[in-house]
Image 1 (spheres, rainbow, N blue to C red):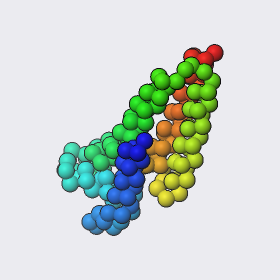
Image 2: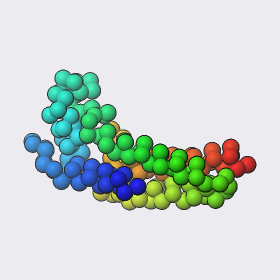
Image 3: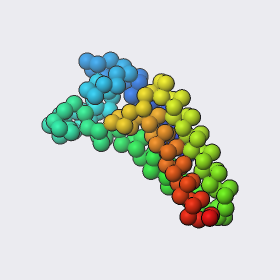
Length: 143
């Protein structure tokens, strides 16, 4: 959890506070954001999605997407260690709602954006996943 939080916080800080030449800091437009700058710098513009200014599955924007995978892995390990009961489903719902709250609050500073896979988007995505998992778990395993 700490590693995931560190990655998301680091991504937020870099996206908001690093100066992108010609665009400034905190610019979240497709061409002016830090992730697009890194993609152009490393991959070159000719290798970007549709020859544009950014790649929605680019190098730098992969970091918060990886957090989604890490949290899914941690959730799966946690579920395997729990006895099959409604408590597990309720815990998943509580964690899911908590992720919603954190993600939507963070979205006030760092908007939900799938193309950039912003930290707030990653957290909200985890929240939806946990709620869906809770429904499936309760239906399949408990009842």
